[in-house]
Length: 336
Ligand code: HEM
Image (cartoon, rainbow, N blue to C red; front, side, top):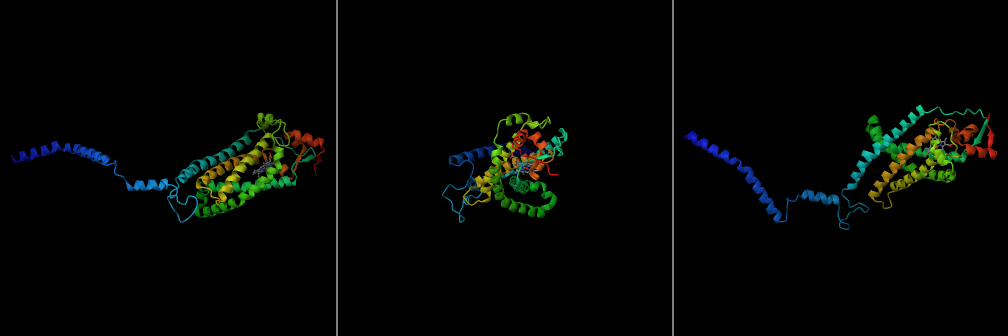
């Protein structure tokens, strides 16, 4: 009998347990309805509200800071994180690989192209191509540009490429020296670029014959010489890219290096992107230029080294300029 009662009680408890979740659900629905009626919805979380206010920042004129200046009342600069991700996830890796790609393309081109013609000086004649002043300007600009390119690449890519090789202490010293050097030489590059552009611009205006040169790809693939004046269309494109790319790098660089004129954080972030992207494009272009100015076109380097080029080289690469030099009697006997 006793056993029968226990079994019955147990059975009753089991048959009612399914009611518990239903009751809990009803209570929750009622509770939410009452809260909404009282103007609430979910119970507000003071933490969320606080952080939302911190992120959005105060309305203008409401907040004060003892330190005066643009952005001093901003507690969390939301755009900074977006900028950091853009720089670290896109500009740095894509830029780095683009430069590696450019070096790869040039190496491949060098290996598969027809051997370029060599000029051994057998013509016995030379033409002055760049007098001292032109060459000094070229190497002044090239030197400052290369220094800025190397120190800038260390700042952009060093933590991925150099840090794992040399460790944090050595990399700290390298990065710090690169930063100081970069800031110091930036304004020097602007001076060199200005002088260079003033001196070379006139010879780089596009003229008849440039389109035909471009249409034939400058004879790079066919290996046949294409008619050109003092500068060919490829050199003119390089010149204007350096002029306008250099202008973008210079203006953005000045905004970054002198943060004293009320420039906002957002403007500085934008300028860092402009500065980095323009510099990466120009560095890739100058890889091509350095190749063609040295082993890519035998005989070219003399133009920026001694200032004189072999008359046969001039006839092959810049035939219209060679003809002019001939007409003006500017072809000299090569020094023995
Ligand atoms: C160390 C590497 C470099 C070498 C071997 C080199 C070589 C040369 C040579 C041989 C020329 C004369 C081409 C000709 O006779 O038509 C030249 C012109 C020129 N170089 Fe360089 N260069 C170097 C670095 C640079 C750099 C870094 C820049 C840019 C910042 C640069 C910008 C120019 C420009 C703009 C011209 C004149 C092209 C024109 O006005 O159309 N060079 N270079």
